[in-house]
Length: 545
Image 1 (cartoon, rainbow, N blue to C red):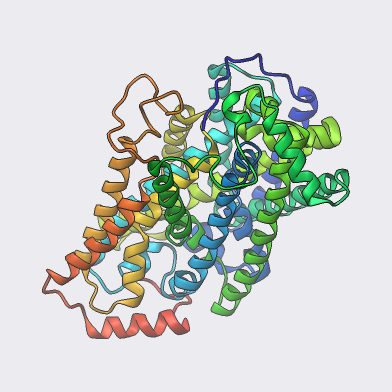
Image 2: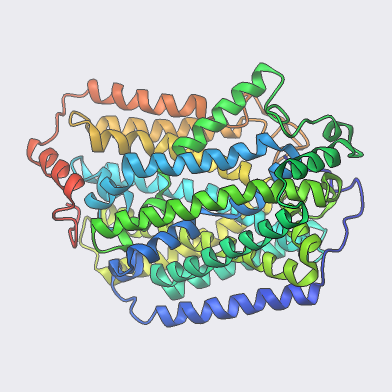
Protein backbone atom coordinates (compact mmCIF):
# COMPACT_ATOMS: atom_id res chain seq x y z
CA UNK A 1 0.00 0.00 0.00
CA UNK A 2 2.92 2.33 -0.65
CA UNK A 3 3.11 4.78 -3.51
CA UNK A 4 5.71 5.92 -5.98
CA UNK A 5 7.01 9.20 -4.60
CA UNK A 6 9.04 9.78 -7.75
CA UNK A 7 6.00 10.14 -9.96
CA UNK A 8 5.68 13.83 -9.21
CA UNK A 9 7.34 16.45 -7.01
CA UNK A 10 5.36 16.44 -3.74
CA UNK A 11 3.71 19.74 -2.90
CA UNK A 12 4.52 21.79 0.15
CA UNK A 13 1.55 21.60 2.50
CA UNK A 14 0.54 24.47 4.74
CA UNK A 15 2.92 26.80 6.56
CA UNK A 16 5.95 25.02 8.01
CA UNK A 17 6.43 27.62 10.75
CA UNK A 18 2.81 27.32 11.91
CA UNK A 19 2.99 23.53 11.84
CA UNK A 20 6.19 23.44 13.91
CA UNK A 21 4.81 26.00 16.37
CA UNK A 22 1.68 23.94 17.04
CA UNK A 23 3.76 20.76 17.43
CA UNK A 24 6.06 22.43 19.93
CA UNK A 25 3.11 23.88 21.86
CA UNK A 26 1.50 20.46 22.18
CA UNK A 27 4.72 18.80 23.31
CA UNK A 28 5.31 21.57 25.88
CA UNK A 29 1.78 21.30 27.33
CA UNK A 30 1.76 17.52 27.52
CA UNK A 31 5.27 17.40 28.98
CA UNK A 32 4.13 19.84 31.69
CA UNK A 33 1.19 17.55 32.46
CA UNK A 34 3.45 14.49 32.53
CA UNK A 35 5.89 16.16 34.95
CA UNK A 36 3.01 17.23 37.24
CA UNK A 37 1.58 13.70 37.17
CA UNK A 38 4.91 12.04 37.93
CA UNK A 39 5.35 13.30 41.50
CA UNK A 40 4.35 9.89 42.92
CA UNK A 41 6.01 7.24 40.80
CA UNK A 42 8.30 5.41 43.20
CA UNK A 43 6.36 2.17 43.58
CA UNK A 44 5.81 -0.40 40.85
CA UNK A 45 2.04 0.02 41.23
CA UNK A 46 2.28 3.78 40.62
CA UNK A 47 4.68 3.44 37.69
CA UNK A 48 2.98 0.49 35.93
CA UNK A 49 -0.75 1.05 36.60
CA UNK A 50 -0.98 4.54 38.18
CA UNK A 51 -1.93 2.85 41.47
CA UNK A 52 -5.38 2.05 40.09
CA UNK A 53 -6.30 5.66 40.75
CA UNK A 54 -8.29 6.64 37.65
CA UNK A 55 -12.09 6.74 37.46
CA UNK A 56 -14.06 4.72 34.95
CA UNK A 57 -14.78 7.82 32.87
CA UNK A 58 -11.13 8.88 32.80
CA UNK A 59 -9.98 5.38 31.96
CA UNK A 60 -12.61 5.01 29.24
CA UNK A 61 -11.40 8.18 27.55
CA UNK A 62 -7.80 7.01 27.94
CA UNK A 63 -8.68 3.62 26.43
CA UNK A 64 -10.15 5.42 23.44
CA UNK A 65 -6.99 7.51 23.25
CA UNK A 66 -4.85 4.39 23.40
CA UNK A 67 -6.93 2.45 20.86
CA UNK A 68 -7.53 5.22 18.32
CA UNK A 69 -4.01 5.15 16.96
CA UNK A 70 -2.44 6.74 13.90
CA UNK A 71 -3.90 3.81 11.97
CA UNK A 72 -7.40 4.93 12.94
CA UNK A 73 -6.94 8.55 11.97
CA UNK A 74 -4.36 8.65 9.18
CA UNK A 75 -4.31 5.10 7.84
CA UNK A 76 -8.05 4.44 7.66
CA UNK A 77 -8.94 7.87 6.28
CA UNK A 78 -6.29 7.35 3.58
CA UNK A 79 -7.46 3.82 2.81
CA UNK A 80 -11.08 5.00 2.41
CA UNK A 81 -9.99 7.95 0.26
CA UNK A 82 -8.12 5.67 -2.14
CA UNK A 83 -10.02 2.34 -1.88
CA UNK A 84 -13.44 3.42 -0.60
CA UNK A 85 -15.56 0.58 0.78
CA UNK A 86 -12.60 -1.77 1.24
CA UNK A 87 -10.80 0.89 3.28
CA UNK A 88 -13.79 1.26 5.62
CA UNK A 89 -13.50 -2.44 6.41
CA UNK A 90 -10.59 -1.49 8.68
CA UNK A 91 -12.96 0.68 10.75
CA UNK A 92 -15.51 -2.12 10.97
CA UNK A 93 -12.87 -4.66 11.92
CA UNK A 94 -11.32 -2.48 14.63
CA UNK A 95 -14.72 -1.69 16.19
CA UNK A 96 -15.98 -5.29 16.16
CA UNK A 97 -12.61 -6.34 17.58
CA UNK A 98 -13.12 -4.02 20.52
CA UNK A 99 -16.54 -5.51 21.23
CA UNK A 100 -15.08 -9.03 21.11
CA UNK A 101 -12.31 -8.03 23.52
CA UNK A 102 -14.74 -6.57 26.02
CA UNK A 103 -17.24 -9.42 25.88
CA UNK A 104 -14.72 -12.25 25.99
CA UNK A 105 -11.67 -11.31 28.06
CA UNK A 106 -11.27 -7.72 29.30
CA UNK A 107 -13.09 -7.72 32.64
CA UNK A 108 -12.05 -11.28 33.50
CA UNK A 109 -8.42 -10.36 32.91
CA UNK A 110 -8.72 -7.24 35.03
CA UNK A 111 -10.24 -9.19 37.92
CA UNK A 112 -7.52 -11.83 37.86
CA UNK A 113 -4.29 -9.93 37.29
CA UNK A 114 -2.40 -7.06 38.85
CA UNK A 115 0.06 -5.46 36.43
CA UNK A 116 0.37 -7.47 33.20
CA UNK A 117 -1.28 -10.07 31.01
CA UNK A 118 1.21 -12.66 32.29
CA UNK A 119 -0.24 -12.32 35.81
CA UNK A 120 -3.37 -13.99 34.49
CA UNK A 121 -1.72 -16.59 32.26
CA UNK A 122 0.60 -17.77 35.04
CA UNK A 123 -2.01 -17.70 37.81
CA UNK A 124 -2.71 -21.45 37.78
CA UNK A 125 0.15 -22.64 35.54
CA UNK A 126 3.90 -23.01 36.06
CA UNK A 127 4.93 -19.43 36.60
CA UNK A 128 8.44 -19.00 35.17
CA UNK A 129 8.04 -20.57 31.68
CA UNK A 130 4.59 -19.05 31.15
CA UNK A 131 5.67 -15.59 32.27
CA UNK A 132 8.69 -15.76 29.96
CA UNK A 133 6.54 -16.72 26.98
CA UNK A 134 3.92 -14.06 27.75
CA UNK A 135 6.54 -11.36 28.21
CA UNK A 136 8.28 -12.21 24.93
CA UNK A 137 4.93 -12.15 23.15
CA UNK A 138 4.12 -8.76 24.70
CA UNK A 139 7.45 -7.33 23.55
CA UNK A 140 6.99 -8.58 19.97
CA UNK A 141 3.40 -7.31 19.68
CA UNK A 142 4.44 -3.94 21.11
CA UNK A 143 7.32 -3.68 18.63
CA UNK A 144 5.02 -4.37 15.68
CA UNK A 145 2.55 -1.77 16.89
CA UNK A 146 5.36 0.73 17.49
CA UNK A 147 6.52 0.05 13.95
CA UNK A 148 3.21 1.36 12.60
CA UNK A 149 3.16 4.46 14.79
CA UNK A 150 6.75 5.39 13.93
CA UNK A 151 6.03 4.98 10.23
CA UNK A 152 3.01 7.25 10.67
CA UNK A 153 5.16 9.88 12.35
CA UNK A 154 7.59 9.84 9.46
CA UNK A 155 4.88 10.27 6.86
CA UNK A 156 2.95 12.95 8.75
CA UNK A 157 5.85 15.21 9.59
CA UNK A 158 7.38 14.68 6.15
CA UNK A 159 4.18 16.10 4.70
CA UNK A 160 3.94 19.05 7.08
CA UNK A 161 7.60 20.07 7.10
CA UNK A 162 8.03 19.34 3.39
CA UNK A 163 10.76 16.76 4.04
CA UNK A 164 10.95 14.39 1.08
CA UNK A 165 14.29 12.63 1.48
CA UNK A 166 14.48 9.45 3.55
CA UNK A 167 17.28 10.83 5.75
CA UNK A 168 15.17 13.77 6.91
CA UNK A 169 12.17 11.54 7.56
CA UNK A 170 14.41 9.16 9.54
CA UNK A 171 15.46 12.07 11.76
CA UNK A 172 11.78 12.84 12.39
CA UNK A 173 11.11 9.23 13.42
CA UNK A 174 14.09 9.39 15.78
CA UNK A 175 12.71 12.55 17.41
CA UNK A 176 9.36 10.84 18.01
CA UNK A 177 11.19 7.92 19.60
CA UNK A 178 13.13 10.22 21.93
CA UNK A 179 9.93 12.01 22.99
CA UNK A 180 8.28 8.64 23.68
CA UNK A 181 11.18 7.63 25.90
CA UNK A 182 10.97 10.94 27.78
CA UNK A 183 7.21 10.68 28.40
CA UNK A 184 7.49 7.19 29.89
CA UNK A 185 10.66 7.76 31.89
CA UNK A 186 9.22 10.87 33.48
CA UNK A 187 5.52 10.09 33.80
CA UNK A 188 5.08 6.33 33.98
CA UNK A 189 1.52 5.08 33.50
CA UNK A 190 -0.03 8.10 35.22
CA UNK A 191 1.63 10.62 32.92
CA UNK A 192 1.01 8.42 29.89
CA UNK A 193 -2.69 8.13 30.77
CA UNK A 194 -3.12 11.90 30.99
CA UNK A 195 -1.44 12.30 27.59
CA UNK A 196 -3.89 9.74 26.20
CA UNK A 197 -6.88 11.56 27.74
CA UNK A 198 -5.77 14.89 26.25
CA UNK A 199 -5.10 13.26 22.91
CA UNK A 200 -8.48 11.47 22.82
CA UNK A 201 -10.35 14.72 23.48
CA UNK A 202 -8.39 16.55 20.79
CA UNK A 203 -8.69 13.75 18.25
CA UNK A 204 -12.44 13.29 18.60
CA UNK A 205 -13.07 17.05 18.67
CA UNK A 206 -10.97 17.47 15.52
CA UNK A 207 -12.82 14.65 13.77
CA UNK A 208 -16.19 16.16 14.75
CA UNK A 209 -15.24 19.58 13.37
CA UNK A 210 -13.89 18.21 10.09
CA UNK A 211 -16.87 15.87 9.63
CA UNK A 212 -19.29 18.75 10.22
CA UNK A 213 -17.54 20.99 7.68
CA UNK A 214 -17.52 18.22 5.05
CA UNK A 215 -21.23 17.57 5.56
CA UNK A 216 -22.01 21.30 5.35
CA UNK A 217 -20.10 21.54 2.05
CA UNK A 218 -22.30 18.81 0.59
CA UNK A 219 -25.53 20.09 2.13
CA UNK A 220 -25.70 17.08 4.47
CA UNK A 221 -26.38 15.00 1.37
CA UNK A 222 -24.38 11.78 1.82
CA UNK A 223 -25.29 10.56 -1.67
CA UNK A 224 -23.85 13.73 -3.18
CA UNK A 225 -20.64 13.25 -1.18
CA UNK A 226 -20.25 9.62 -2.28
CA UNK A 227 -21.02 10.47 -5.90
CA UNK A 228 -18.41 13.24 -5.98
CA UNK A 229 -15.84 10.91 -4.39
CA UNK A 230 -16.44 8.32 -7.12
CA UNK A 231 -16.22 11.06 -9.78
CA UNK A 232 -12.82 12.20 -8.49
CA UNK A 233 -11.54 8.62 -8.33
CA UNK A 234 -12.71 7.97 -11.90
CA UNK A 235 -10.88 11.08 -13.07
CA UNK A 236 -7.52 10.00 -11.64
CA UNK A 237 -4.49 10.15 -13.93
CA UNK A 238 -3.53 6.68 -12.66
CA UNK A 239 -5.50 4.12 -14.68
CA UNK A 240 -5.43 1.58 -11.86
CA UNK A 241 -7.00 4.11 -9.48
CA UNK A 242 -9.47 5.42 -12.06
CA UNK A 243 -10.88 1.93 -12.65
CA UNK A 244 -11.92 1.47 -9.01
CA UNK A 245 -15.53 1.47 -7.86
CA UNK A 246 -15.04 2.89 -4.35
CA UNK A 247 -18.72 2.53 -3.46
CA UNK A 248 -18.69 -1.26 -3.74
CA UNK A 249 -16.55 -4.08 -2.34
CA UNK A 250 -13.53 -5.18 -4.33
CA UNK A 251 -11.43 -2.06 -4.97
CA UNK A 252 -8.59 -3.66 -3.01
CA UNK A 253 -9.71 -7.12 -1.96
CA UNK A 254 -11.76 -8.17 -4.98
CA UNK A 255 -10.88 -10.13 -8.07
CA UNK A 256 -8.62 -13.13 -7.50
CA UNK A 257 -9.21 -15.90 -5.01
CA UNK A 258 -5.89 -15.03 -3.35
CA UNK A 259 -7.07 -11.46 -2.79
CA UNK A 260 -10.31 -12.66 -1.21
CA UNK A 261 -8.44 -15.05 1.08
CA UNK A 262 -6.13 -12.17 1.99
CA UNK A 263 -9.18 -10.14 2.99
CA UNK A 264 -10.54 -13.00 5.10
CA UNK A 265 -7.17 -13.31 6.81
CA UNK A 266 -7.08 -9.56 7.46
CA UNK A 267 -10.61 -9.59 8.89
CA UNK A 268 -9.79 -12.49 11.21
CA UNK A 269 -6.71 -10.66 12.52
CA UNK A 270 -8.59 -7.39 13.06
CA UNK A 271 -11.58 -8.93 14.83
CA UNK A 272 -9.57 -11.19 17.15
CA UNK A 273 -6.45 -9.08 17.58
CA UNK A 274 -7.64 -6.50 20.12
CA UNK A 275 -8.43 -9.20 22.69
CA UNK A 276 -4.73 -10.07 22.65
CA UNK A 277 -3.22 -6.58 22.66
CA UNK A 278 -1.34 -6.20 25.97
CA UNK A 279 -1.31 -2.38 25.97
CA UNK A 280 -5.12 -2.23 25.66
CA UNK A 281 -5.77 -4.94 28.26
CA UNK A 282 -3.31 -3.34 30.71
CA UNK A 283 -5.45 -0.21 30.84
CA UNK A 284 -8.05 -2.08 32.90
CA UNK A 285 -5.56 -2.33 35.78
CA UNK A 286 -5.58 1.47 36.21
CA UNK A 287 -9.06 1.56 37.83
CA UNK A 288 -9.73 0.54 41.45
CA UNK A 289 -12.75 -1.76 41.05
CA UNK A 290 -14.55 -4.04 38.60
CA UNK A 291 -17.46 -1.58 38.59
CA UNK A 292 -15.18 1.23 37.39
CA UNK A 293 -13.74 -1.12 34.78
CA UNK A 294 -17.26 -1.67 33.40
CA UNK A 295 -17.88 2.09 33.42
CA UNK A 296 -14.73 2.65 31.42
CA UNK A 297 -15.99 0.11 28.88
CA UNK A 298 -19.15 2.13 28.24
CA UNK A 299 -17.18 5.32 27.67
CA UNK A 300 -14.64 3.60 25.47
CA UNK A 301 -17.20 1.91 23.20
CA UNK A 302 -19.19 5.12 22.79
CA UNK A 303 -16.18 7.21 21.81
CA UNK A 304 -14.56 4.58 19.59
CA UNK A 305 -17.80 3.76 17.76
CA UNK A 306 -18.56 7.42 17.07
CA UNK A 307 -15.04 8.08 15.83
CA UNK A 308 -15.12 5.23 13.30
CA UNK A 309 -18.31 6.66 11.83
CA UNK A 310 -16.46 9.94 11.36
CA UNK A 311 -13.67 8.19 9.41
CA UNK A 312 -16.19 7.24 6.72
CA UNK A 313 -17.06 10.89 6.09
CA UNK A 314 -13.43 12.00 6.37
CA UNK A 315 -12.19 9.36 3.92
CA UNK A 316 -14.80 9.98 1.26
CA UNK A 317 -14.53 13.71 1.93
CA UNK A 318 -10.81 13.56 1.18
CA UNK A 319 -11.50 11.64 -2.03
CA UNK A 320 -14.12 14.18 -3.12
CA UNK A 321 -12.42 17.43 -2.09
CA UNK A 322 -8.72 16.60 -2.40
CA UNK A 323 -8.68 13.78 -4.93
CA UNK A 324 -6.60 10.60 -5.08
CA UNK A 325 -3.82 12.07 -7.22
CA UNK A 326 -2.95 14.81 -4.71
CA UNK A 327 -3.14 12.33 -1.84
CA UNK A 328 -0.92 9.73 -3.51
CA UNK A 329 1.47 12.44 -4.71
CA UNK A 330 2.01 13.95 -1.25
CA UNK A 331 5.03 13.12 0.88
CA UNK A 332 2.99 10.97 3.27
CA UNK A 333 1.13 9.00 0.59
CA UNK A 334 -2.21 7.57 1.66
CA UNK A 335 -1.51 8.66 5.24
CA UNK A 336 -1.68 12.33 4.14
CA UNK A 337 -5.40 12.22 3.26
CA UNK A 338 -6.67 13.63 6.58
CA UNK A 339 -4.11 16.49 6.79
CA UNK A 340 -4.74 17.45 3.15
CA UNK A 341 -8.49 17.45 3.79
CA UNK A 342 -7.92 19.74 6.78
CA UNK A 343 -5.94 22.12 4.55
CA UNK A 344 -8.75 22.11 2.00
CA UNK A 345 -11.43 22.75 4.64
CA UNK A 346 -9.80 25.29 6.93
CA UNK A 347 -6.48 26.39 5.51
CA UNK A 348 -3.17 26.50 7.32
CA UNK A 349 -4.56 26.89 10.85
CA UNK A 350 -6.90 23.87 10.70
CA UNK A 351 -4.14 21.86 9.03
CA UNK A 352 -1.76 22.73 11.85
CA UNK A 353 -4.31 21.84 14.53
CA UNK A 354 -5.34 18.55 12.90
CA UNK A 355 -1.72 17.62 12.28
CA UNK A 356 -0.84 18.35 15.90
CA UNK A 357 -3.73 16.08 16.89
CA UNK A 358 -2.35 13.35 14.65
CA UNK A 359 1.09 13.88 16.13
CA UNK A 360 -0.45 13.69 19.61
CA UNK A 361 -2.12 10.45 18.57
CA UNK A 362 1.22 8.91 17.66
CA UNK A 363 2.99 10.11 20.81
CA UNK A 364 0.22 8.92 23.14
CA UNK A 365 0.01 5.47 21.59
CA UNK A 366 3.77 4.87 21.48
CA UNK A 367 4.04 5.95 25.12
CA UNK A 368 1.31 3.47 26.08
CA UNK A 369 3.03 0.70 24.15
CA UNK A 370 6.38 1.48 25.73
CA UNK A 371 5.07 1.43 29.30
CA UNK A 372 3.31 -1.90 28.65
CA UNK A 373 6.33 -3.58 27.11
CA UNK A 374 8.73 -2.27 29.75
CA UNK A 375 6.39 -3.30 32.59
CA UNK A 376 6.12 -6.78 31.13
CA UNK A 377 9.89 -7.19 30.94
CA UNK A 378 10.56 -5.77 34.40
CA UNK A 379 7.66 -7.52 36.20
CA UNK A 380 7.49 -10.81 34.30
CA UNK A 381 11.04 -11.55 33.15
CA UNK A 382 13.29 -9.63 35.55
CA UNK A 383 11.33 -9.88 38.82
CA UNK A 384 9.62 -13.25 38.37
CA UNK A 385 12.02 -15.26 36.19
CA UNK A 386 15.50 -13.83 36.75
CA UNK A 387 15.11 -12.74 40.39
CA UNK A 388 12.55 -15.48 41.23
CA UNK A 389 10.19 -13.02 42.93
CA UNK A 390 12.87 -11.40 45.10
CA UNK A 391 13.23 -8.10 43.20
CA UNK A 392 12.16 -4.96 45.05
CA UNK A 393 9.62 -2.58 43.52
CA UNK A 394 12.32 0.06 43.03
CA UNK A 395 14.42 -2.48 41.11
CA UNK A 396 11.45 -3.30 38.87
CA UNK A 397 10.89 0.38 38.09
CA UNK A 398 14.60 0.86 37.35
CA UNK A 399 14.70 -2.11 34.97
CA UNK A 400 11.51 -0.89 33.33
CA UNK A 401 13.09 2.49 32.63
CA UNK A 402 16.13 0.84 31.05
CA UNK A 403 13.84 -1.32 28.92
CA UNK A 404 12.02 1.78 27.67
CA UNK A 405 15.29 3.22 26.37
CA UNK A 406 16.27 -0.01 24.59
CA UNK A 407 12.77 -0.46 23.17
CA UNK A 408 12.78 3.14 21.94
CA UNK A 409 16.02 2.65 20.05
CA UNK A 410 14.82 -0.60 18.44
CA UNK A 411 11.48 0.94 17.44
CA UNK A 412 13.25 3.90 15.85
CA UNK A 413 15.30 1.56 13.65
CA UNK A 414 12.26 -0.53 12.67
CA UNK A 415 10.17 2.60 12.08
CA UNK A 416 12.75 3.90 9.63
CA UNK A 417 12.59 0.59 7.73
CA UNK A 418 8.77 0.71 7.61
CA UNK A 419 8.54 4.37 6.58
CA UNK A 420 6.11 4.78 3.67
CA UNK A 421 3.86 1.81 4.45
CA UNK A 422 0.15 2.37 5.10
CA UNK A 423 -0.24 2.55 8.88
CA UNK A 424 -3.54 0.67 9.05
CA UNK A 425 -1.92 -2.22 7.18
CA UNK A 426 1.05 -2.31 9.59
CA UNK A 427 -1.27 -2.29 12.60
CA UNK A 428 -3.15 -5.22 11.07
CA UNK A 429 0.11 -7.20 11.21
CA UNK A 430 0.42 -6.36 14.93
CA UNK A 431 -3.16 -7.56 15.42
CA UNK A 432 -2.30 -10.84 13.69
CA UNK A 433 0.65 -11.41 16.05
CA UNK A 434 -1.49 -10.56 19.11
CA UNK A 435 -4.33 -12.83 18.02
CA UNK A 436 -1.94 -15.70 17.24
CA UNK A 437 0.39 -15.50 20.25
CA UNK A 438 -1.88 -14.26 23.05
CA UNK A 439 -5.59 -14.78 22.42
CA UNK A 440 -5.77 -18.61 22.43
CA UNK A 441 -3.88 -18.85 25.73
CA UNK A 442 -5.96 -16.07 27.31
CA UNK A 443 -9.23 -17.74 26.28
CA UNK A 444 -8.15 -21.21 27.38
CA UNK A 445 -6.79 -19.89 30.71
CA UNK A 446 -10.06 -18.16 31.53
CA UNK A 447 -12.55 -20.73 30.25
CA UNK A 448 -10.93 -24.21 30.17
CA UNK A 449 -10.10 -25.84 33.51
CA UNK A 450 -8.14 -28.68 31.88
CA UNK A 451 -5.75 -26.22 30.20
CA UNK A 452 -2.18 -26.66 31.41
CA UNK A 453 1.36 -25.32 31.07
CA UNK A 454 2.33 -27.34 28.01
CA UNK A 455 -0.78 -26.18 26.18
CA UNK A 456 0.02 -22.56 27.06
CA UNK A 457 3.62 -22.77 25.88
CA UNK A 458 2.79 -24.60 22.65
CA UNK A 459 0.03 -22.13 21.89
CA UNK A 460 2.05 -18.97 22.63
CA UNK A 461 5.33 -20.00 21.04
CA UNK A 462 3.64 -21.80 18.16
CA UNK A 463 1.37 -18.86 17.37
CA UNK A 464 4.15 -16.30 17.76
CA UNK A 465 6.77 -18.15 15.69
CA UNK A 466 4.39 -19.21 12.91
CA UNK A 467 3.00 -15.67 12.59
CA UNK A 468 6.44 -14.02 12.50
CA UNK A 469 7.83 -16.56 10.01
CA UNK A 470 4.84 -16.15 7.68
CA UNK A 471 5.13 -12.35 7.86
CA UNK A 472 8.85 -12.49 7.02
CA UNK A 473 8.13 -14.67 3.98
CA UNK A 474 5.08 -12.67 2.87
CA UNK A 475 4.73 -10.04 0.11
CA UNK A 476 4.41 -7.42 2.86
CA UNK A 477 8.12 -7.69 3.64
CA UNK A 478 9.84 -8.59 0.35
CA UNK A 479 9.12 -9.23 -3.28
CA UNK A 480 7.85 -6.03 -4.85
CA UNK A 481 7.65 -2.24 -4.89
CA UNK A 482 5.06 -2.26 -2.08
CA UNK A 483 7.21 -4.37 0.25
CA UNK A 484 9.24 -3.07 3.17
CA UNK A 485 12.41 -4.45 1.54
CA UNK A 486 11.96 -4.35 -2.22
CA UNK A 487 15.53 -5.29 -3.16
CA UNK A 488 15.10 -9.00 -2.38
CA UNK A 489 12.33 -11.54 -2.88
CA UNK A 490 11.68 -14.32 -0.36
CA UNK A 491 7.88 -14.01 -0.47
CA UNK A 492 7.11 -17.75 -0.43
CA UNK A 493 3.89 -17.23 1.56
CA UNK A 494 1.30 -15.64 -0.76
CA UNK A 495 -0.81 -13.69 1.78
CA UNK A 496 0.07 -10.27 3.22
CA UNK A 497 -1.60 -11.07 6.55
CA UNK A 498 -0.95 -14.53 8.08
CA UNK A 499 -3.88 -14.56 10.52
CA UNK A 500 -5.94 -17.16 8.66
CA UNK A 501 -3.14 -19.71 9.20
CA UNK A 502 -1.41 -18.70 12.43
CA UNK A 503 -4.51 -18.03 14.59
CA UNK A 504 -6.24 -21.43 14.08
CA UNK A 505 -2.83 -23.10 14.41
CA UNK A 506 -2.26 -21.47 17.81
CA UNK A 507 -5.70 -22.59 19.05
CA UNK A 508 -5.02 -26.11 17.81
CA UNK A 509 -1.57 -26.25 19.44
CA UNK A 510 -3.11 -25.21 22.76
CA UNK A 511 -5.51 -28.16 22.58
CA UNK A 512 -2.90 -30.68 21.45
CA UNK A 513 -0.34 -29.53 24.02
CA UNK A 514 -2.88 -29.76 26.82
CA UNK A 515 -4.29 -33.17 25.91
CA UNK A 516 -0.85 -34.76 25.43
CA UNK A 517 0.26 -33.72 28.92
CA UNK A 518 -0.58 -35.54 32.15
CA UNK A 519 -0.62 -32.24 34.04
CA UNK A 520 -4.17 -31.51 35.18
CA UNK A 521 -3.29 -28.48 37.27
CA UNK A 522 -4.28 -27.68 40.84
CA UNK A 523 -8.00 -27.89 41.60
CA UNK A 524 -7.77 -25.22 44.30
CA UNK A 525 -6.00 -22.77 41.99
CA UNK A 526 -8.48 -23.45 39.20
CA UNK A 527 -11.39 -22.72 41.52
CA UNK A 528 -9.73 -19.58 42.93
CA UNK A 529 -9.08 -18.20 39.45
CA UNK A 530 -12.66 -18.87 38.36
CA UNK A 531 -14.13 -17.06 41.38
CA UNK A 532 -11.74 -14.13 41.10
CA UNK A 533 -12.23 -13.68 37.33
CA UNK A 534 -16.02 -13.63 37.67
CA UNK A 535 -16.33 -11.53 40.84
CA UNK A 536 -13.10 -9.55 41.23
CA UNK A 537 -12.85 -10.72 44.85
CA UNK A 538 -9.20 -10.64 45.91
CA UNK A 539 -8.05 -8.82 42.78
CA UNK A 540 -7.37 -5.45 44.40
CA UNK A 541 -3.84 -5.43 45.72
CA UNK A 542 -3.31 -9.09 44.91
CA UNK A 543 0.06 -10.31 43.80
CA UNK A 544 0.30 -13.18 41.37
CA UNK A 545 1.84 -16.21 42.97
